[in-house]
Length: 177
Image (tube, rainbow, N blue to C red; front, side, top):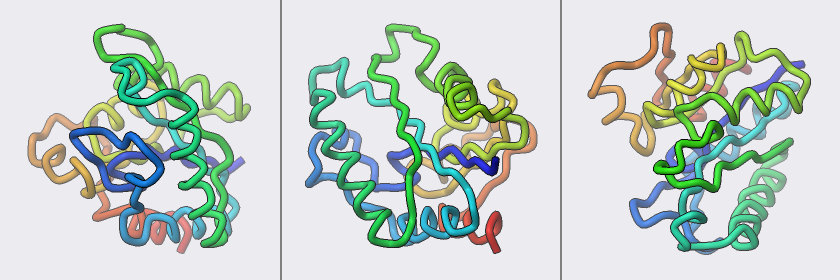
């Protein structure tokens, strides 16, 4: 199976320091929805893996998160793509759970549920924690320079072998020419 795992905020949609708390606040990054469609049409299963500590902080609930994800999925469907699954960690960083990136628990669970070894599976994100989780899970770390990506790259400390692309569209064009 061809699988790709994507972070959400800063990778697929615009991020906010105040969190994306409603469907109206979810705005796709230029070319990201089409990039997912390109991956889908090339035979990739696309899974989203996202930390959503806003739930633990009481900023929104899972019903609202599902509504936000419905907006995202509809946008991807309209572009001719599909998101096969969405995994999220609802915990705050203080919880020190295994599912919150940079820990690999969420990615390992995706591999288990999708019945796919993670070796070589691209995990695309804009933050250090995304590529650290990918490396810890034995997957392929990919950094995009959208969202926090430029600051992440400039700060250094990326896992060895981390690939860097300007955005999700450039990554998709590379993976599915």
